[in-house]
Length: 284
Image (cartoon, rainbow, N blue to C red):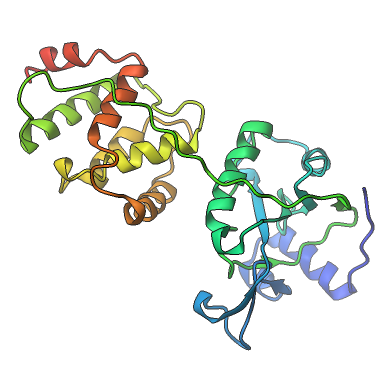
């Protein structure tokens, strides 16, 4: 349902001024909240949270969704999603944001990851991955005279489900030495780059995570991060900063031996790369 909000005049004026100037000092003067948590006075450090609310705010920026022209239409479409409580124009006026209530506040990051994937798959909307996964993330006031509210919203319970296909590639002889494995990986990555192959064309977070974990394998150390970025550069939405942050996060959850570099080879083969031909042509 469409609702009307009448903010204090100074809040409206400052919000509209920021939209004109883009001056971060103007934005910093706006009221802000931490939807995900209540904290001890004068503190917004995650360790000082008193109560986690389970309220997650997602932000959809124009810069990440250049195909969108009508943001009023987007926020109206989103409010029909049974999990979304509220939608409105973002602080800049170029984008929108919304709220959902997640089942387990202690798993806000995981809920946010799956929610981002759902919004991408359902509406082709890229969610800003730098905001929303932490209980101490800020939400600045944004002027919107006609936001949308869903009085029949439901709690969001979904979490990422990781499904790994069995790697197709298997060494036919003895186990390769680390040096030879790295040579093979570099050769396949070169093939990926030369043919401009997107290893994750469906923007599937499960596959993205599997690829990141594959490059955490000790057999490609100490080049893990470098090789991961090289392999992902042909992805249509590749961003170095965002990808590097995700790699840092996934490194912490990686369990040695659960996912190996063989997963990378398997995904490449599924994308049409003939591994044997690559090794032969590059004399490996």
